[in-house]
Length: 211
Image (cartoon, rainbow, N blue to C red):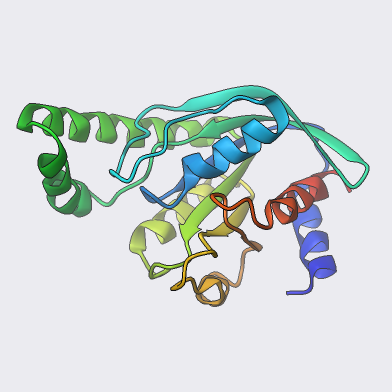
């Protein structure tokens, strides 16, 4: 989608608020916290959370308030919220739990599962209090994960505008085009939070709130 048409689409959907609550959703290890840290560090000099290769490192709602972003002569302020990763229960109780056991004691692994479940519940409750959402996807993974569709369905039901972030485009197996094709009803920004690549395109999309 051409950038001008993309920004017009985003602006038409989102409206024109000068301040809004922005929540970052996605599967575990999609790069949500990396993106939240990149945004927060650039504009406030503060990190918002801890990045880990172990799923569900983020199990609470991490937030940094009053993040003022300036792009192309426009200025807007967000309360930035890093949401715990959303997992299908089969993944959480099977694949992820087994990974936890390989990294920590059984007691800690069980507690991590409990905390992850609580984090998902908080993420669902948060839907009633946010203005905009970013859904982060790992562009080197299969975009057809059913949990992505569930997240989008929940956001749509709450009438929360969404930008999909095709993250990790720096990886050799990255295929952001597959995300665009799968979710062609949504605006998609391709970037690498880790390598700080194309973050400005995300800011431009968010700035379209204020047209």
